[in-house]
Length: 449
Image 1 (spheres, rainbow, N blue to C red):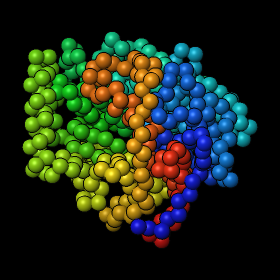
Image 2 (image 1 turned 90 degrees about the vertical axis):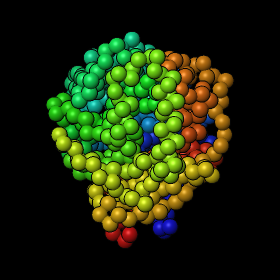
Image 3 (image 1 turned 120 degrees about the horizontal axis):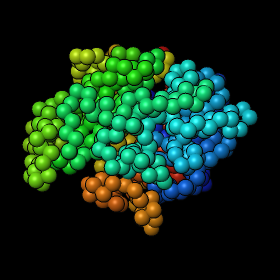
Image 4 (image 1 turned 180 degrees about the vertical axis):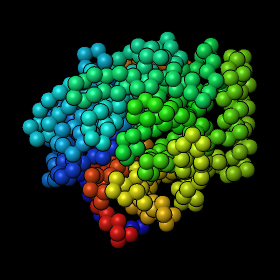
């Protein structure tokens, strides 16, 4: 265990969070760290519920500058700084759609509102890339509740997908549609019932290419994921891996590391369009369970053949395993913004409810432990489930119990989601180990490790 000091950034009685592991949380000066403030943790957000938006100062005070209706607990509201300025963005409802609010942290004022949401900003802050959060919410992804999916009848809409917005004039267009992605490097059956969506969008360091996940449910009830990349100009769309694929980040401009199992014979078989026959649905689910049992016995129950892998972003991707024996389970990695030899990562809770936080050095294949943080075993409040689960596709609800879905979309399911600050030496993470959900900060001198 390394001697890295961890301190609480926020405190109760209200809860505070940032969200995901793929965004820089501090401004360039380092005196403000973006945060959300909420009253209730034990259920998912309700339609039209509002949450505090602001930042934490160096004296650990939360400064509220506005509110948002666009929040999910895994990814927050996608708070992010606009390049090196003290302006920041947050998603919010803009009339009848999801859009973006832009705040000036110095004046604490709302200065602009865009009619399209922001999932990630270009490094120069001039361009915003967004996802279809209404579709994500309906299909069980990390969306926002309260606005209907305009393309709920479409399995792969041609008019929705990843959007690109000019921050100067607010003009938005579709960069790449769900239909374009589905028709890229795979045989698309227009009569198949599976609905497709795009999620987890991440720009490479120079902002020239975008990685994202294309997901859809299979006839056997499981999820299929494709790791896709496309140029920031919408050109060069390609699939670089397919299978069970989870959290990822770029390492430089040309490689991506991700947890999962890519391009296996089993996943190729499951992707066969001939298996979309509804009559095969039940037999396929049985076969899937049997296959998982066999694989589990051969490879051990942990991982099921999954690992962290490095993939080249190229027309003929090269895949290799990384972190063997060290990165042995799914986590939420983020590459250090100033030293790509290092990433910070976490784990899901083990059987005792403990989450681990660590650093990993790619060049040395070395793991440095930071700490262990306990989950809490409270169950979600189901009293308002009809409201906060409204609009979720019935096929999704058939694959998971309402209580389990409510737990994973509530603030109780608090992944650490570590993310770097702009200085590349400090980091923050969310945790619930002290009873309320709060943000914590650590400081590292990577040269001393």
